[in-house]
Image (cartoon, rainbow, N blue to C red):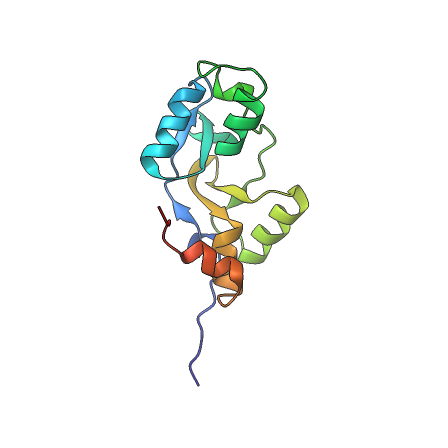
Length: 143
């Protein structure tokens, strides 16, 4: 019988050094960065810490579909109530914080410094590796 290693802290499951965007950058800049990095979320920063997140859906629904142009700023569409977790927090804390805030991703901080991002997919891979969400999270894009 093999023993499965369980992550103890957020540091064990997070994606380190997430891609960031400044709150004053344009939606076009954010969208191009997402396309270049093949990601759907950027952490919005002001200085060294996270002030929000912006998703591809935010750009389309809150931005373009609402009549804002590609030159509108990220801060106009970003979620500004960011739920964060600490790098040394237990994985259970991340689950609880994300559930309480009803978010799919949470920036990870070491003090005030942004060091990573954790997603429900990351947590699914760790907590229930045989789940459908874990399978989807591990899969390569099917382009």
